Length: 293
Image (spheres, rainbow, N blue to C red):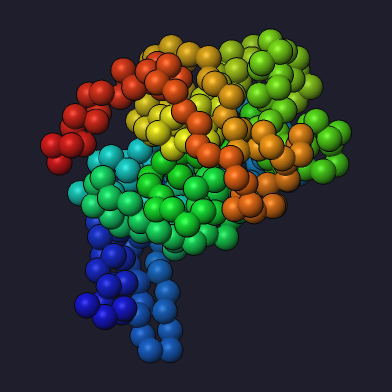
């Protein structure tokens, strides 16, 4: 199959997907001098302007929590409910659009790749700050790279700031590491107060922070499925204390800039059965279904 035929086949498959939390692809133009994808119009634009721009306080955290759940459901659909698994590879606030009712829709499948369930694929991505560590090594990667990117997105939703910002004190510049430090010292509530989160919203914010720490675990096997992430965010299952997620940074400088490549790290993947069994139990039914498809 030639490149053009392959692209048409993949666009056709993506165009047949439907979920309330995905931007609908209506069609495409593949002319020799004009190529375009035709998506539905989403009135309120991307989530990033509500997190980092002048409108960053226009949405209450309760609504942001709903946006996080809807986004997770859209990704879970791509991973676990499509006939062919679709891996997005570029989950970030700019690719989460909000409709007239501020319902989230995952957008931009320009880097998405179709694959058979259980298979590994290789891909390059430009959104380095949101890319999982394995994306920068010569290893095959799986759908768990989207879980990592969603974790970074969750950090940004909680903090209403970019995950890395050098205008903060050194210990606070990389928000995921600051979150871990405060969680480990039982000061997560203090950090949330510094982020401007009101007392009534702290329970949701703490839950999102813990889920984010699970999502960015260094080993892909330690990250939950997106369907499990949905249940965690909705409060359907208890969230156990996440283990330290940044083993690849232990031999590096204390606070890591995500603009650096992870390819130079010599630290190997760390994982233990005890850190995984808390979430594996909740995923067994889903994994059984996945194996049978």
